[in-house]
Length: 89
Image (cartoon, rainbow, N blue to C red; front, top):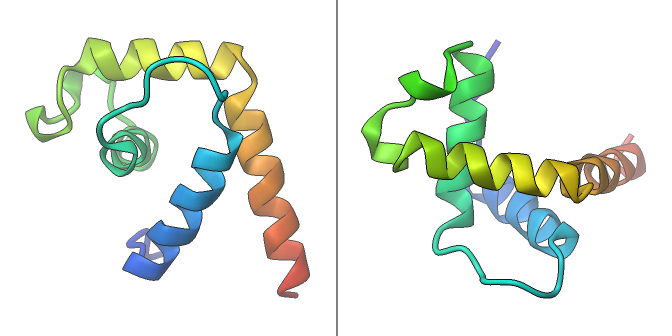
């Protein structure tokens, strides 16, 4: 199974992710790098402390993930992706 995403896939995912983010608060510097870190964490089944340095500080990634999860951002993000997916079937 391939988990590589094309640039077009990333563009779509980032548009949906950014639409799911809260309107207030500081804007992150690199949403794609953040999502790539989460993808790496999920696919490679590593602990958060084992993320490669290229993704940034593991604790910053974890704190952002935790904060956004509690705010319901990922639930909304995946709902939007599911709706887009069902339209293409």
